[in-house]
Image 1: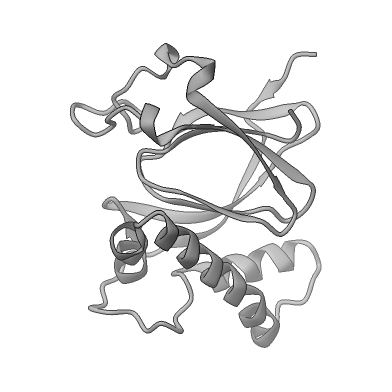
Image 2: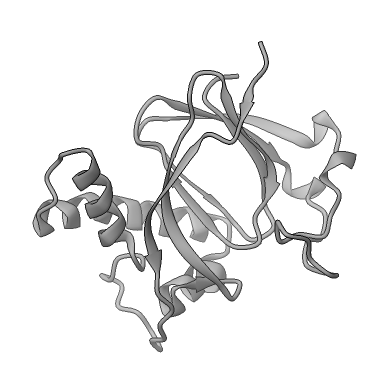
Length: 182
């Protein structure tokens, strides 16, 4: 009954850094169109521009709404939309496939993350904001954070289930673990 760590992760598009003063409200998240086209092409699906534009619009809108609900849209998400970076770091879109006995280990985010659940359900153990320790106060390790996550208690986490079609966002410093089932 042991879980295998590190499910399959395939990079779909890397976002090249850029600079605009104020992105248009109708502008998609940087690199999103290329990522959706790459994902559709690898699956033998429709990669024409109009169908991709239709697929991207709800993801853009939902990501913006989720960041706004957390009070972060004007900071973290707008930095990504203006520069193609988050917390000064390069961004990418990836397809994460989590098999039946796999999980993605507990980790912290040095930059934002936007997740769209394409199918099935994603089970998440998310550190409550009140329990989130400071992450960027000292020298960083290879994963990009300075806090020892092993000192957290199970009661510091919420358990969430995200069904197909759901979008979720992780702000800078958020901590969570993902798996396909509880």
